[in-house]
Image (cartoon, rainbow, N blue to C red; front, side, top):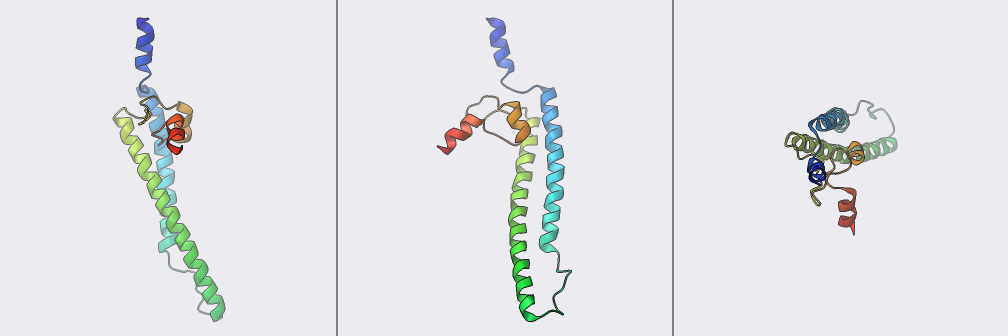
Length: 133
């Protein structure tokens, strides 16, 4: 009975080796997310390289409309990417604190499969489902 209780206690957090594995995954995702963010930011701030000065006025209005829409979409995507980066950075802090992978609602360990798919998750599937009800 004493060994069973000890096993349960050990499962309240991931081992240092597992945390290192998650850290590597998060660092890779963070690097890609930052590159994607820079691409989106460049798309928003980049001035028109294909100028429409020499085309008809009607075509120019259409071009400007498409450009505005595309900048709005890029802006929204950039904001989402920035939020994703912040979530990944927070996950790295939780790894350092050794609190990574623990559901903030139930206090139970979030399954490894879920963390591999969503490395910044702070809720187990059960907690997430009960939240949406």
